[in-house]
Amino acid sequence: MARRAARQRPLLGVLGKDLTRRSRGRCELCESRDATRPFELFPFPESPTLDRALMACARCREWLETGAVDPIKAFFLTTAVWSDHPAVQLAAARMLLVCDDPDSPWMREALDAVDVDPCTGEFRPSTC
Image (cartoon, rainbow, N blue to C red; front, side):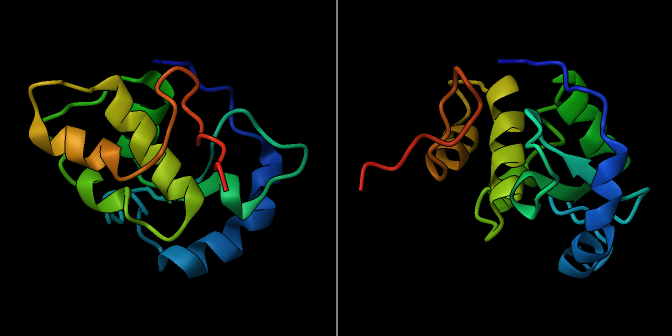
């Protein structure tokens, strides 16, 4: 499921204040304050939206862009998948999917917490 992310759009800056307020200046995945900035999840909607954007630190942005997630350092994703914000949940699930290890119970539990299709990396449509 590793997918190269498209280049971030300048339009994302319009959400900067809302994202900073929501995240309190921290990475919404790992809580780091190291070089946090807005990050938009691919595929990009026509206009930037908070449901597809999050604040991410340099490490998490790199992991999201390259798909090279270090499972030993990624345990924080077990908390991020429970976020109230769809973009944070989806980003955490995508990171787990690229480092998924069937022998790792914590990864399996975290992935079970969100209903994301492993083939598309998107939320599955609800059946309600």
